[in-house]
Length: 88
Image 1 (spheres, rainbow, N blue to C red):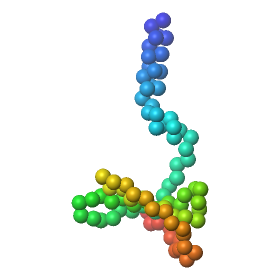
Image 2 (spheres, rainbow, N blue to C red):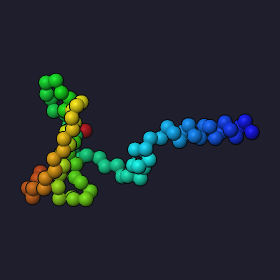
Image 3 (cartoon, rainbow, N blue to C red):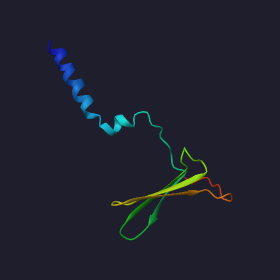
Image 4 (tube, rainbow, N blue to C red):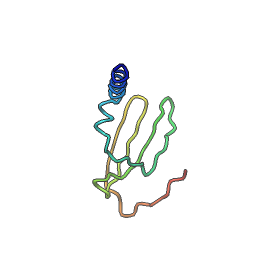
């Protein structure tokens, strides 16, 4: 009986450790950015991610993050866009 009670307690504690946001995004697809880089600025750590939205392959979105703020801008890809392979 003690083993069953201990097992139930363990399962409840484990289930509680999973956050709601993890449960909501459980089946979501992970998408890697097309390009990611840092911009050297004084006093800020600016990280930039460029990606192609799955719902609109003709667009590009750019997301910027600092320690304080986040921004995003999307626009149509130009016909003359240079296709580069990001260096790793």
